[in-house]
Length: 266
Ligand code: ATP
Image (cartoon, rainbow, N blue to C red; front, top):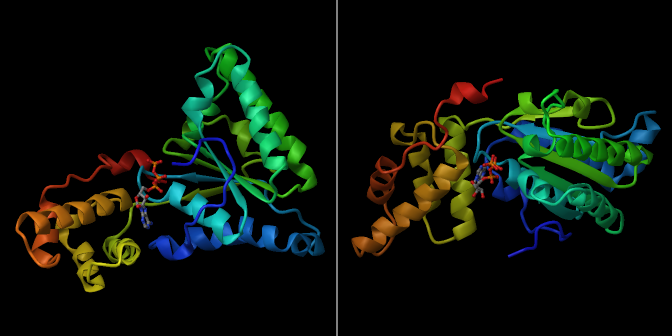
């Protein structure tokens, strides 16, 4: 597997992403276009946004979108998990953070993806640990240093946007806030189609199962486990291929992983 914090171009494409057409369009405008044609924004007297914050319930495609953005822009991709960057000795987190931006500068165009961003940049309230405050400040300094349009773009992801320090959301930082929602019935079909296409052995028609009540409140991640479990079910009954009954049985054994959706609503 790929090493955390190092730059590579992912192989995810837009075809791998089901539903989420609006978010995709916003990301193309905010990141893909400026990477492909940096001059375009300048011609309108505006600068491209430095970063985007994706938020919403877990398992609905935030990481997937970030990878697709980088791949479709032929940009390098550096992925960092907030909590992992924090688990360091005094001063080490800041150094690791600066290292990430250095690495990004030496591999432009580059998309830096910060997952579990709330862990990295919590509100700087009074009781905030001094170490966290230093990390927030380091990140702000790095971001403000990017204003010269160096071909480095940030995508941050969180399930809890209200936990993030507001200073992060100012213009020139993570200005664009995009909601990545739990799929509706029709969108579940679309996601299943994308997942089935990647595997190539299952009949795409079976994606229609996603519309049914058995799949109510399933996230993209749940739909991925639905495919896996349907495969296992077909294998167990020694069927020649995966059929509707395998999906229905599998769906009955999956509990939607997003518990209380109200926690994540806009
Ligand atoms: P978390 O908040 O837990 O980090 P996330 O929003 O980043 O979750 P992903 O890691 O992108 O979610 O999704 C998990 C998996 O679920 C993906 O690898 C993919 O297989 C599947 N998936 C989720 N959403 C979609 C989608 N819209 N289209 C296709 N596959 C999806």
